[in-house]
Length: 220
Ligand code: AMP
Image (tube, rainbow, N blue to C red; front, side):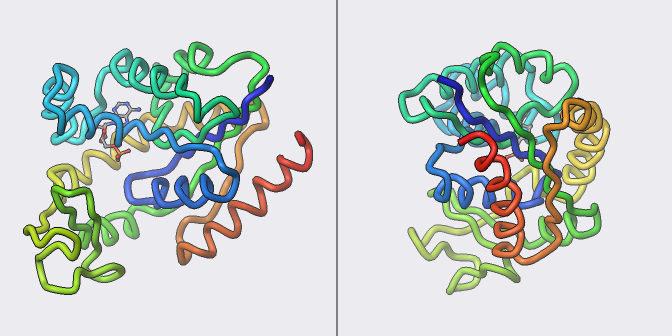
């Protein structure tokens, strides 16, 4: 059976994670997030987590083999039998070479690019706050009820290391340098969907679903 695999591509804070979750609810396929898998390892203080932690804090890319192994393991879980939505992989030409090891020949694979310009990315990240319990906030778009305190657990919320301005600039540089070859590959095989990410979340979702439905009509 061929699985349906959607790969979300976009700069940091393009809303990839949010859109992946919304798409997941709509088409009932799980999200496989490279960043989340790495953060899980980091929290668990596993060998991989310890190795990845400083790389992530610097806004650099964790070694391909490490990310690939985590994704491969996750993609083989029973809930991903019919397919899955990948958030954050492949992120470079080197990672593109791992794709055939992650997907089968008969799988239907599409990439979705969420386009957001750098200025908007910086302004979005500027207000981002997180809590150790996993809750996420934004000073402007999703403020906590009490200033600086998590609504869910009452702990102090903080800026993720890799959301600090200098690291954000680095992440953007890394994104532009590496994503080009990935996007070009999907353009070449005519499997790239482009969505304007510089719109309200619900509008981005609607545009994305409209495009995905066209594909589902073809493959269902
Ligand atoms: P994200 O949550 O997608 O913004 O990812 C956070 C960080 O995790 C990135 O800045 C990288 O350090 C690391 N990371 C996530 N995905 C990958 C990947 N495909 N390859 C290498 N590192 C990654």
